[in-house]
Image (cartoon, rainbow, N blue to C red):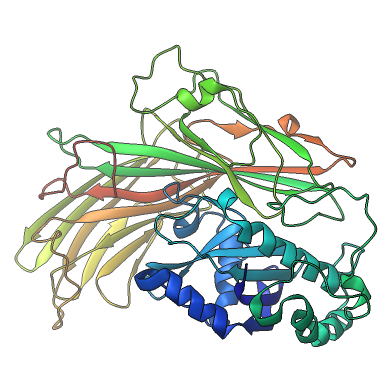
Length: 493
């Protein structure tokens, strides 16, 4: 087993990020290029690696717990072997990047995979995964000591200064030694300790020390295509994810999270779970959106017992069939010479709590000159015309009025002398309005995680934090008087 690169990074909640140490091994990289052939992807530059790791570990942008490129259900999670998307398009990936996170310290390495990369080999079949984690664990012990806490800054600086000589002893030319060098050739912190301690599993990135906290975040994303035309069927769907972060002492702590539905709630479907889940009722996994949703479907409670990794991870994902979308909209455009007449109505469904963190409607216009005079009135909220003069943003605020209905009406004159952006789909009066909103403490399916239902079997009683939210995703309302794209099945965007 050999490693292509090794990094040590410090951070403070995603801020003050600093690459403290970097080591690359050109001879190993030459072998990687030979093995991968046309699939070869070079190691990311040092200036990029810190942000890539923080994003993938969920330590960057704490106000964005859901990032499509990382958390979408179509992407297979293989922790602790992370996949980093590199390049401006993100089409090429570096895999497997192994990490250990302790406090504000991140240790990462990229082992050499000596088998064809396509298809990817299963993690249990690769000895380099456990060997790479063992190397990182040894370096963690050297940098952090035996106390399990992150060292003081001056202590860390001193140990980082000796890290190059340590790597010369334990990992010459990028290949870790099967046995540690003779006593006296290594710092005492890296020497083997007395036996008898519980063995750390290879997939476990570390052991938590300190205050015990278990955080469970439930996020539902609702997509919608509304046409306002009886000949075209409106479509919508709901996709939910449960993300956990368990800071619990012990090598193999046990945690159980239970999802519950209201008495009249639709059963969850298409449930996918993280590999750390130790057991699961077979009826949970058999529910599928392809089947007819009848009264015999399993409707919970959904129990997920697991032994968690230290880093944030997606415990499960699911879909749900709901009777109506949260916001119903109608959009009417009429073209008159060089102007458009607009009429928009948005109505919040009576079952949805009228309390938003934010709610916006974006009305873009393509294949026209830039906007000139804009004469539009709204019954609630505020309007803003983008600097590019091709987009109207309607800020609806945090509440709909008591009627739960808002309207927008007026005209737009396109008297600009410069052409705006083009779109082959939105020609003539084919146009759409896109909604962006977030409703805290609400899910469209009614699914929730009761704080008292989270069970933790550990030596200390942890603090339990549970949250839930509803987010819009690809939420479109099309102009009913123009031609619109129509899908005959579920929403696919």
